[in-house]
Length: 206
Image (cartoon, rainbow, N blue to C red; front, side):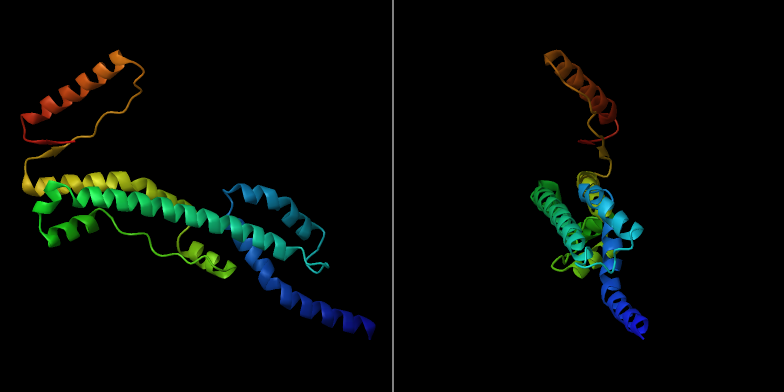
């Protein structure tokens, strides 16, 4: 009789704690590339190995809170970085003489064709909101969206110029390390050569 009572208590405790454990597993997966994952992994492994899910006090909520906090911070930072860069580049594009000369439908089409859109609003107030946000868009995807902004806005500017100058050609400036005046002059000569080579075919967009 005592064992039955104990088993029933364990059953109820498992039902109460399992959802939080499932949250922990999901959070740890999404936080795999964050430092916090390495910090809490030993604790998670100990819970699994030593069967501590029913221990008192419950070790899971503290780990869930720690992972939630780290992921919330990472999501907010990713959104802030994207939004700041997006607004700056959008303002530069919309204030350019070329952009002002094309029609609103043309602008809309160019932005859409180059995947230029605001980052979706994210909800990170609760653990479940953090998880729901990450289920739709992972941190790596948010960072990739941010990293792609320079190229996408360059392409949009080139497309707008192409509408006004059908023969216009877009060329990327070469990369490199400039350590002195000689390096700078060599880089300028390289750019000049590339531009001159293209000018015979029409205007050049940098």
